[in-house]
Image (tube, rainbow, N blue to C red; front, side):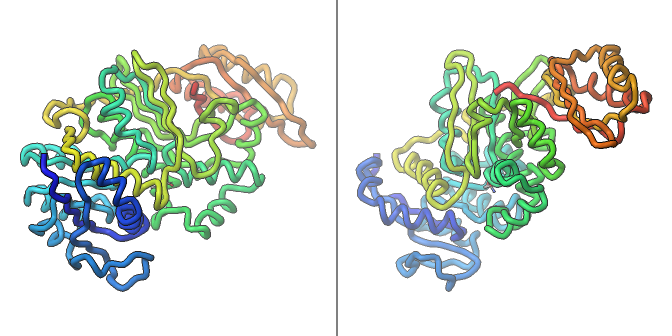
Length: 429
Ligand code: HSE
């Protein structure tokens, strides 16, 4: 095994890139001891050369073009920290593979959309793509799945994989404020991506879920089939009502292989308030991995930020320095199978909140509709009302979304339900 320094070319010097430079400088001694080699940066590339990042770039060659950086002869590993599914990030990653470089990236969007073709290209060229930082920031969940749990059949992955959404939802509850107010606050604090819909639309978290599902189930990434719903429609009324019933609302990702195919969902769900997921506050992430032999493993930590994400990038770089070369998604890309997406979700309890007209027999009518659709009520609560409609909350026993949709149609016929009920799935955590 060589003891020559491992030479990095880093493209993208935002929060993560600057964090990696700082970490390499600060922890040079321990990195050298742990890998048996020095890790050095030879060249960097970013949009602006002059921006103050709190790091001295004078010792590195500069490239305006990340593709040129990726091809440099003095670069062994191309570290892609630019982001974006296409454009310069993908061009430079492909150029690096063609030029015989290994790649470390934090780019969940690129992997979720082009991961299969990039993995095939890398493996054909005898190269490696690593991406611990792409999923849940500092939490080593890719390693946990691909290495720590490699001997297990994975049965389910679930978790909170977007810190900004968890910040918004928990802050709404703690401050008693609306989605719009807390969204504006989060944006003002710089907690949201440049395109906030990547966060609040659930897209960023769905990218991460699709990547984990590929590793867990040996399937080709199928981001397009993630059932996706963001948090924009979650109201403070539902957060309070859910809390009253013992739940908290989370943007929850779930992936599981079922007899009907691969189920992948990233949607607002209720989880028990006392569960580890229910207690997750602020911008923290939590991923729960369930294996047939290992049981349930819960990983919790910072899903974003300079230190946590740089830590994840460095774990990949250090693996390469040690000569550890895993297949991109835990097994050769040409052995990953195309997924059959599940057409229906696994049955679950549901939460319904509706406004009931204050008329005799109204409650009996909705109970009758639910009974006819085979939906059993577990708990029900009616709140006080002032000369208006009665707010009613129902938690069902386990049922299907199809049965719930039938109930919603039949509610219309009763003429006692005002407006469209809110429906949220309850996930056991
Ligand atoms: N914006 C993401 C989050 C971090 O809030 O979790 C990067 O994926």
